[in-house]
Amino acid sequence: MKSIFFSVIVLALCALPHPALAQDEDSLRISVKGFVDTYHALRLERPNDWMSSRTRVRGELTLERGNVGAYVSANLVHNAILKDRSGLQLREAYAYYSDQHWDLRAGRQIIAWGVADALRLTDIISPMDYTEFLAQDYDDIRIPVGALRLRYSREKWSFEAVAIPVSSFFELPTDNDNPWSIGSLPIGAEPGRKVYNMEYGGRLSFFLSGIDFSLSALHTWNKQTVIIDGVGAYRRMTMLGADCSIPLGQFVVRGEVAEYLDEAQSLPSTRAASSNALIGIDWYAGNDWSLSAQYAHKYVASGDHRNTGLATFRLSKDLLHNTLALQTFAYIDVTNGGIYNRLSADYALNDQLHAMLGFDYFHADKGIFSVYKKNSELFVKLKYSF
Image (cartoon, rainbow, N blue to C red; front, side, top):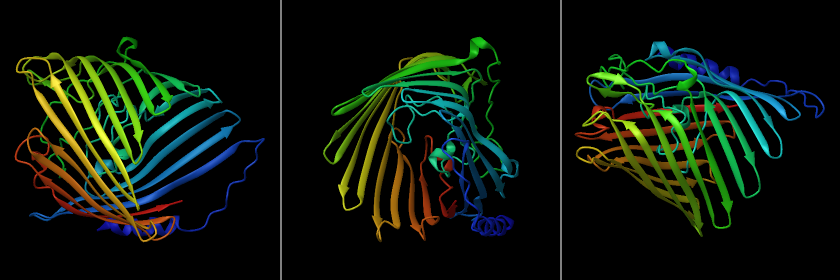
């Protein structure tokens, strides 16, 4: 395929040596880094077609003088399956001021809250890109938002305030030519660019002996469209949340709760509060073994009082002097019995070049994974960092 030839050429070009940029403590400091990766996935069921075939060059530029700086990251993408995803894509672009206590960032940026791993409770500022569902690194699925973020830090605590003048929302695959399409869905009109539609909130964090915890509040929107009377809709909501992390020897216990006030609902009523809670545990067992498990529960206080549960499980092991990383990571739809599991082997040929082979397994008769029950795939990925 053209995408594979493109991948080889780009990898070869990036492997060429390039001169180091001069550094002077009293002048403008410039840092350039990035990576090239290429990812290809083949469906294991008929018609055994390509599920994904994309190559990307990521560039990251940092300019800094004293306490003031700017950061820009962008992707140059060739996507052989989703043609409209090819091209130059701006990712993050923000200016910042940072000193011992203050950190101010203004511009397009990713904002992550909470302690959950790959689950969203209080972490609802940056929406998600589900164009290729979860067949991307989780960090790549996050969509940056145009925001003003101010953080004040002390030794034992910190406070963060955010304001998002123009909201961003989930990107969903509705094109039938996309192997990850969820079918036709009325997306609905996004809120107008008005001052009263802006998002704003804050997070107060404490770092104490034996426990870290945070309290958060956010006036926002439902970031994923909700179908109300056959029409896609976005509605105002308020999130009140808290999270904590407690180390206990080889273990770390994590907890997170979030109350969504006046959240938009499809059925049986259009607006209702929902309660969300998560418990997780990480075990660093030694000898390069690690295990993580989480369970998140959602209760909607309306009509039939709906309860839903979603769990994750991660097991990883490093081998060959930490050059080979083996991992299995699964989402488990506790409510409907579905599962999505990614098995992967990541081998470091050297400090810059990694090769990964993996298998994505879907099984579900109903629920969130049922639309992808025929999307089990075998994938290969190469990544060169510079």
